Length: 364
Ligand code: SF4
Image (cartoon, rainbow, N blue to C red; front, side):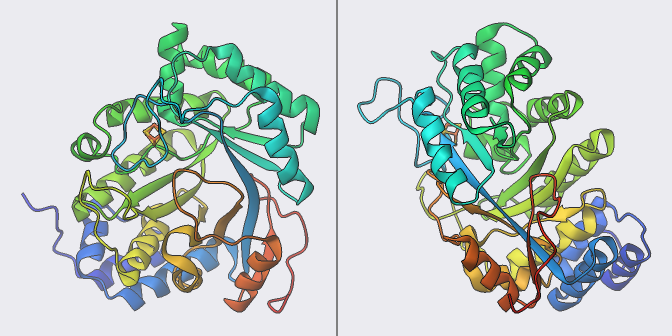
């Protein structure tokens, strides 16, 4: 049975502009048939209504990949090493603290702590590195840590309920969770991309428990493989309905796969399709305030257009990233120039989207 609805796309867009929620079949019709410029214009109007229209934000964080040992073997990963590999490593507390100290010295105040699934590391290792960062660098350093697959591994190896594991991590100083590990939230696509990862229901359970335990986060989608358009919308529906229950997602980020694997098909997502999906995210996800674009995926030209198609944030200046190759901005000044050149007033924000300053003028 086709999911397409009979309404013309203009009717659906008018409905969104009137503040009515659009359905998944309506979002699919927009993806299939809507004119890109009309979609972008409606997405920008909705962004203007919700957040204003002249400021675009950025933040700075350091990615610290504490280990590259992993037994999950996601088909898109160019980072993991099998247990026992000579190229494998595990960072100790001093190494993690030093990496974050360098980032703090150049203006970052967030750490994104993520690694492979290495079952030999006990819960004490994780709480230890979090505590060490907070004790030595200060509690103002925001620690965003661990994707669902890592948390599920900790639940298994400790034998503790997930809420208790999260309680221990939070007591050590963990502040939030990343949006990692979602890719495409359908079980068919998970079997293609990461057959050893848990099903969608487990991803939802982990994120829901994190939010219930006071650990907010973001969500993302990574598309440009064998997924259907209906599966992209199904993914957005999973996220929207979880957000209705918890309110724990601060932002949503659409990404595309990169040509770094031969284990599944990766197609080049054209700029107009990426922007279309981003605009649909703004329109469909009426319960998530912030839509981010990442310059690491399609570059600065597309990133600039994304700010005119519903995005309000350029994600972050990422100071280390091992899983994806980087096309990101390398300095805070470059981020500010990029935003100003795109026609917006740049402002630095923290994890909670609180502005660290008065937004600059568009020429800053
Ligand atoms: S993406 Fe993460 S979980 Fe998947 S193989 Fe790589 S390190 Fe492991």
